[in-house]
Each structure stands twice: as structure tokens, then as C-alpha cells.
Length: 223
Image (cartoon, rainbow, N blue to C red; front, top):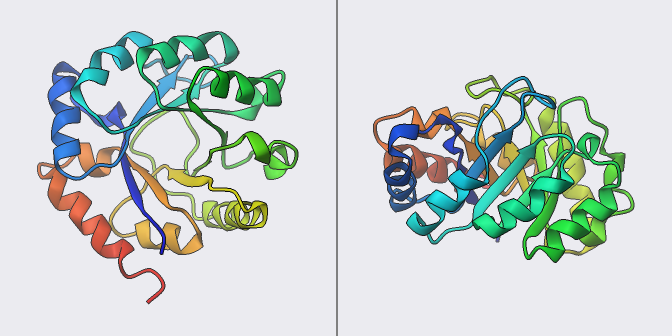
């Protein structure tokens, strides 16, 4: 039976109350805290760095999943590992040597993964599956929260699921972008098991109500 994980993105949280926000969303049933790092270079936005990760680490026991939308990527990886990240993912376009970057993340004590934009080909997976703990499929173009889900992402999720199953390895398959109560089941049916949601959760008054509704939809998958 598939274990599904809900990973609220703090990009949509109230930054004036960030410690309280992450505590509240975990109390509401979140499994992972998703941490979006943007550099105004690889993506057209600027967000948060290791100091913020370090600041929220004492507030939650669940894993912190750091999604690096930065280029170049290697120099900042050890900083996030020291700040308390459990998972670090990056975009293959942001690394000169993907295998080396994956190994750097693992050597820093974190789980490692690759992120695929809507227009990024999946062939980057071909020779590094042995170093990957998570694959993240972007269902929007990275850079901003609140965008609409791109349906083509379902095909990429299905492809990644096939690659994972063929590898025989325990690799998480995450989807990020426009995930809401009304489309989470479709993403799960395509093969995703971990779901990033920003404004769909933090933009609502009742975090638990949204997360419970998502789990209700996930429970229908395969029935």
C-alpha cells in the first residue's frame, strides 16, 4: 500500500509568524515541510536561505525538504545541511556535474533528489538512479507560488514512477505546483506519493480541513 505524504510549502506561509505557521501545519497533519529557495538568477524571484531553515528547525520534528532553485548549486548545499535540512533537491540545469552534486548532498547527511521543470527532459535520471532518494516533478514553471497545475505533468509523473519501479529502489516521487484537493488524486493515480501544496493549504483558514480533504481524495485512488 502506498504511503502518501503531504508537504506544505512555506512559500505561502505568513513569514511574520513562521515558527507558529510550521507548528500549526504539522499539528494539522503535514508530513514534511517544503522549503523553496529561489535566487533571482535561476528563477525570477528571491526567497529565503539557510538562516531561515535553521530558525524553523527547532519548531518541527518532521523532515525539512529544501528545494534549491539556485545556480550554481553546490556551494550552498553544506549550509542547508548544517541548518537542519533532511532532504535537498536541485535542478539538473543548475549543476555542472549532477552525479557530484547528488553525492555532495548525501555526503552532507541529507537525502538527495533531482527536480524536473515542465520542459526539462527526464534523461538526466538515466545514470544516477543509484544516488537518488527523491524525484520532484514540477507541475508549474518554478519561481512563483499560486500557479495553475500543468496537466502534462501527469505524463512525467507516470514516466518517473516507471523508472522508480524498474530500479527496485525506495525513491519518493514528489509533485509540486498547483496541487489542490480537486487534483491531488489524479497526481497520485499517475504515481506520485508526496504532494507539495502552498496556497492550497497556507492560504486557507483551516489547515487541518484542507489536509484531511486531501487525504480523503488520496484514499479513493485505486478503488
